[in-house]
Image 1 (tube, rainbow, N blue to C red):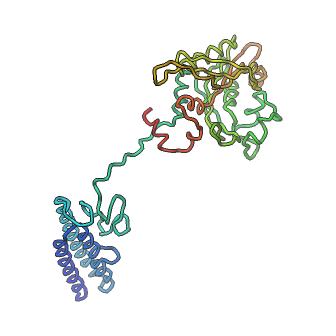
Image 2: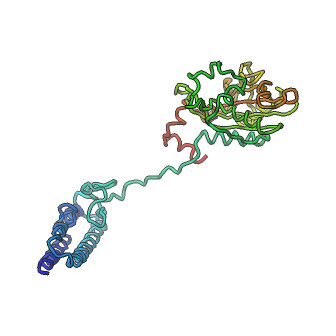
Image 3: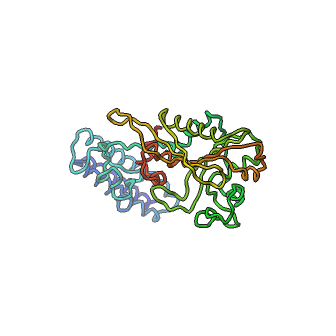
Length: 371
């Protein structure tokens, strides 16, 4: 027991010495030096005494540990009280006017001699401005999809989904696109092992709906599509696409034009105009590219028009597609259209580069957090 008692006596002596040093400290910087001298994890004098615990019998070690905890607690309390005095009076030397930052072992949380975040020589600087966290929010393309969906839902459309990994039949052949068509070439399509592929458009969803449901059909199919496109300001190899399909008796091109004109007016405003230009798609006949001209008010309050901007492709469903899906083309007709919500968002928010949607830059995304 004599060895144990000598260590306990040494702890008492160090505790008294440390308390005296705390009382004599002239400022926060000197107080921090006292803390490191006695409570530092590596070179602290009290820690040095505890490293000698292996010299005493095992049954005496709990008593030594309890005494060490008492001495450390008393010293930490004195350090905190003295630091509070310095903070209240504004006195001190090179350190700032606040309490030392440390954990209960006497070490700085940063493990770097007291130079933790927001500290100088281990002292917390309470004058630093607060940092707010990004609250999160819906992605701008998601905002566009949701807004488009609300418009088409108001016109009687139902939302539909399908798998992103498809077969060649659903992605090409059922849509009147032979496999020797350039679009089916590996330069445009991402193929998977086993012969399947990542869908290059959401049109396979239309095929699956026509297979499973009898007309009338009125669906909107948003989803991710994949192509071997160059990543540049207007293209991306993976992007959201949104397609619509209407099938019923007596559907005509007039219905297509009226539906898209109403969509454009609801989305961009009542003065929006639309224009159809002849085009070609294997799964629609006739086919068209759809442009819009928007009306806006500039900073001086003058009403102006934009140039014509292409927003989507559209057309009447080809009878060959109806036959592949088991729908009688002599009885039913329909129309389809497809657009990229990313490009719609670029027009809506004035974004010049589509890559901004994919870079996860909080400075960019935070603009949409409260929308």
